[in-house]
Amino acid sequence: MDSIRQAIDIARGTPLSSPRSAPMDEASAGFATVRLNPALLEAHRIVAHGGIEAQSRYYDMLRTQVLQEMDRSGWHFLAVTSPTAACGKSVTACNLAISISRLPKHSVLLVDLDFHKPSVAKYLGIGEPSGLLSVLEDRAALSEVVIEAGFGRNSVLVLPGEQSRSGAAEWMASEAMATLLQTIKREFRSRIVIFDLPPMLVSDDVISILPQMDAALLVASVGETAPADIQECQKHLNSTPVVRVVVNRVTDQADAYYGYGYGYGKAKK
Image: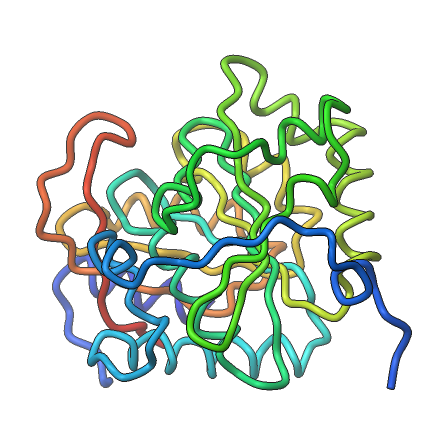
């Protein structure tokens, strides 16, 4: 939990030193495809698509650190969460997924698992498609809602989220969710799967799903995240490896839950 302790120091203002069988996604050409708009991505602070911007280098460094930990441990599922709103977790999840997808020997499925306020489709500019909830409710097959989002010569697979008006935590702990996660693990076994989860302290959604994740990435924010918030998250993460803590320096004014702007910054080990 060194990353957790270091994030608490940051929140307090303490400086830190700085051939295989083809799974479904490779065998099928049936996914809907979109081309991502670079200008729209950058407007939403998704900057890792080009690999040349200064901000992109931060995500590339985070990519290397995360992949080293996941490859060493044989991990497949990475949860991205934050203590509270206004920390930049969805922007971090999108940038990390795109950064990994630029590597020739790595590929990613990015899953929006936030039933309260799904944001991945919005930030990537892929409209408001059917997504994860449609699969859970048996209104669509998984292959029908996964989108191949292209940028440059690369692409990332996206399973968009859909807002659930009620029962978000129940969906997280449902048999349908467990079955879906097993299907994803089997059918997309060649890919790193990144799950954009809700903030940990807003509801019990994250606590419900964490046992099915291999590891977690915690996103905090100077000015928004209190040391007590990180310490509370640590209680729930004791049994889940934390690969890194990302500390964003958000300058936008936070509003009510999910009525905020995101920021980005350096990943801190």
